[in-house]
Image (cartoon, rainbow, N blue to C red; front, side, top):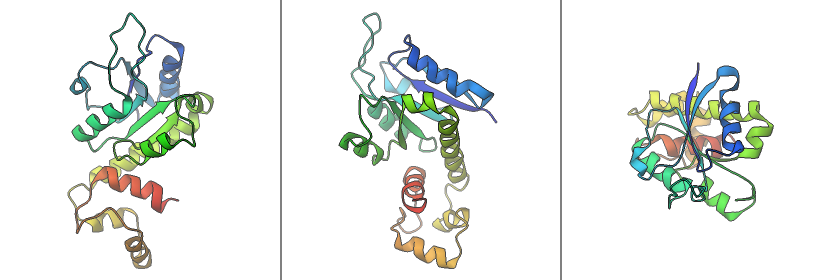
Length: 194
């Protein structure tokens, strides 16, 4: 299967974003459209399997029209319009390092599934491609049971009765039987899988 990725970056003419596209499309696992950030957030299509958003979208070259928002703002807009697709912020460690409070805030924001470093993706493409595919497939599994009761999530996790009791103690993101994909996906990755 080939997944569709949208990559939004304000440096579309520089080598690094184009390297990311080349890496994503290597081996035919992804098609990856690289676009400049639009002036209107609503101009972004929701017909992709995953969104890769540069964090700093405000530093366009002089010949391009700058935008006044960051990738995290675009992530919030996309999350409101489509809860069924993973959103990844791509950045450089020079923008936010792995131990920064800013990275922790972004990763705890329901609009962003994960923060990845462009350098890491370029150095170890197979690892990052695999992580992105796992994220997409996890979202797809949750999409398939959307509208179902919480029990469907437990069945998807293949939890036996003992595990279900432990899961109840782990503060799952459920209100009665109501749940949503972004919160549940984050909870599975950050609580159950850790």
